[in-house]
Image 1 (tube, rainbow, N blue to C red):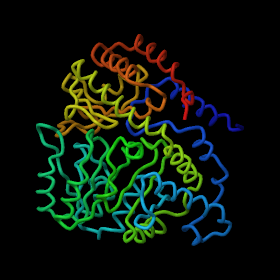
Image 2 (image 1 turned 30 degrees about the vertical axis):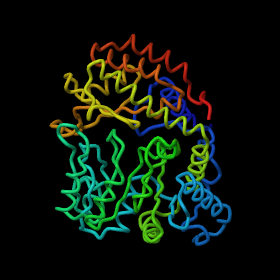
Image 3 (image 1 turned 120 degrees about the vertical axis):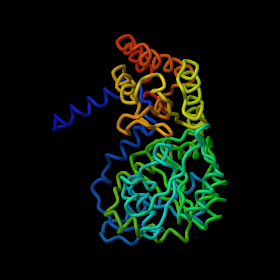
Image 4 (image 1 turned 180 degrees about the vertical axis):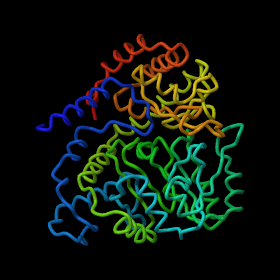
Amino acid sequence: MKDKQTEKLIKQEQERQNKTLDLIASENFVSKDVLDALGSVFTNKYAEGYPNTRYYHGAEVVDKLEELVRTRALKLFKLSPKKWNVNVQPYSGSPANLAILLALVPRGEKIMGMRLDMGGHLTHGYKASATGKLWQGVHCVLDKKTEKLDYREVLKLAKKEKPKLIIAGGSAYSWKLDFKKFRKIVDAVHALLLVDMSHFAGLVAGGAYPSPFSCADVVMTTTHKTLRGPRAALIFSKKELSKNIDRMVFPGIQGGPHLNVIAAIGVALHEASFPGFKKYAKQVVKNTRVLAEELKKLGWRMVSGGTNTHLFNIDTFQNGISGNEAADLLEKAGIVVNIEAIPYDLRSPKDPSGIRLGTAALTTWGMKEKEMKIIAGIIDKVLRKREISSVKKAVSRLCKKFPIYGYRW
């Protein structure tokens, strides 16, 4: 690379990733093939519009590409093209959710999701997001004792507020959602059901999480978490809703699609169609449960008691450590996590009472239950005993056993 400064930073980031245990639940590692697609000549092409209706000529090949990726997306999640449409152009999850809401919910109406400190997401009507400024965000909370969703209470809130659309999904809820119960709730108030499966889409594709499609009207997912693709999003919608959604993606809020990213999505979807991906998805859940159970044995409180998905939250403040302090200490030792509010958190979102952990990235490396037990002990030493130097060496030894792109696809 002629640009030595950028080349240097790329090498530094590669080195950081190689020497770091990545427990951030929204991160993963893509294959070399996905990286090749991202850096392909599709980067050069601008193609506003959709296949066969472009505003730019020279789109014969990119039309074929977009149709291929659409077909793969529907096939991966076992959807009939007669009943479902998929838009593969959203740049990421936040604009995808915005496009869905703009297409389906009149401005000023109510939308309902989980509260942010309960595991919800900014784009589910939170006041700091555009979704909370354009619509009235109504938010359900978790049961104070179990810290889990009480679907009876969700129904009560829905009947009281009468939202036009209800969002099932979030960014930090560690238990599988009951989509059938959500369907009954939306039917009771004549609303639409949007499932945001950004976090668990890969688990759905791998058969390690129930599919939402039999219950949902619209399903949105990012492609870079458990689906192990590039940073982008997909919007699946029932045919009767798809035209409005497509119009809102383009020309509503976006311009020309990032065709290199769409190519990379296609590669990721292809990789997820093989039996090995099912093993991967199931191993993610196994690893997460083992890591949570081991930390629980070591005296750390799991929010809501644990997990049966790919992530969980720890109430570090119960042991006298804020989320920021815990994340900082772990990073010094070579482990990255993100800070996370716990249900009914009294601390600031900038320094909440907990941290969130996920195992999707380390499972991609090939780590299994044995490594999760070792990592639990390492985390405990860092947070409880403030052991940094010795732990950093242990982390380095572990990382060397699982180099990036040393895993098989």
